[in-house]
Image (cartoon, rainbow, N blue to C red; front, side, top):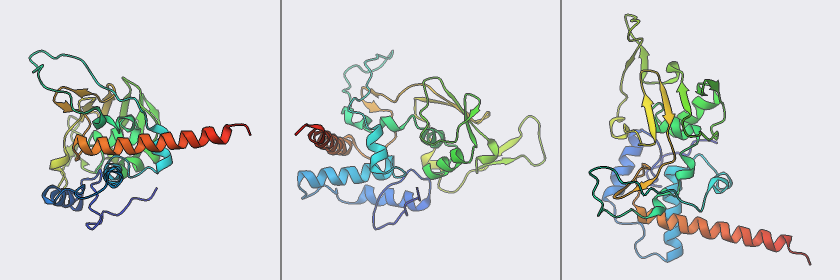
Length: 246
């Protein structure tokens, strides 16, 4: 699927480290709320448009609905020293958790690619392996404990050391505007020396926070989820009517 353009007029935040995307995030932070003076359906549609622009711009509606789950992961674990009075964020923040197992998402979240489209291209071109076996399908779903490895030569900000050094074969040369995006989710364990990542588990919701990186608040995710739940219900009802005998 062709990468959508990052037009300032559209104001959609993407999974990308580009300076244009960073500027859009700045504009969205200082702009008035998009939900103002809109009907409930318009608010759901706008929330769906915004969240899909970030969490699934490289997927069409059919691909996303196929992976969309009505069950949302959470956690009741108590961590030592954790404030037990903190409330769970709305579970709707995990609406797009079903996508985080995808191979292209894991490569991007591990900071091995500057955008989700670059990560997708790396997978398609055979630069990524799972448990030692090359996988060229970006939609491949990792299982808990899987080790995903990326060829160092495919990582654009890794360069061979000059002069060559057996102990440090590659050096890290940061790209402009990448610093705000350099963070690793808790469900991934990344080894930058080996250019590999372990997928530990599904992202979950814990008291006071959600593990899925997102530029949008839980309320926006909740509206988007309501839109997709209603859409799946309508499609299911239409299918059942079609199967009903005359």
